[in-house]
Image (cartoon, rainbow, N blue to C red):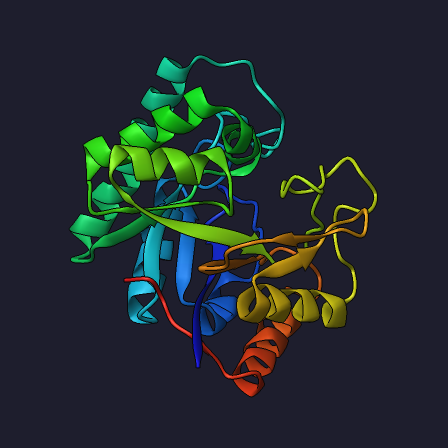
Length: 252
């Protein structure tokens, strides 16, 4: 029997704008990464999403990103390690307050978008992220791309890490995600995405976009909740994992 966490980015609505189907998808995940107001979300959405996660017994994590609402945090920004540290502490602290106010406990931190991808390759940024997590709460788990600098930095700082894989994204030979600017960055077939996930969990392997089989660790699987078929996919992946002897379980 294999165990794996399923995480989903949530709380990304903002003011009058609604994004994702959080209320339904949360029933099929074990961890929620909640936006902290910089790339998406706002204080009211943060509080409501924390409440929803607690009601559904889903582990709560902060999802801090660049201060880039119009770009949804997916645009690379030239930034110093010190600025990254401050961004992280500020956003983690904001969600931490809501979780404490609601009587819960924060479980993890997963950087968002461009910040996540940049820190996966940039050791200095990765170290700033890991140090910020450690300084806020050394018991928090840092989610990072499997094999990335973030995982290495977290281990060096002395916090628990969780190697993350992506259900609907393709990979490069170096283990990085294919950039979203590439038309082949996303896997459009649910069947192929589920097949990729099961292989990553049970075999520790994934086929790169170039056709090379690379090693990978899968402690937590990211599914996206803002696609047209997101809810259907969330149900399908849970069923497929169960049939393959994989139990969905948070990392708490």
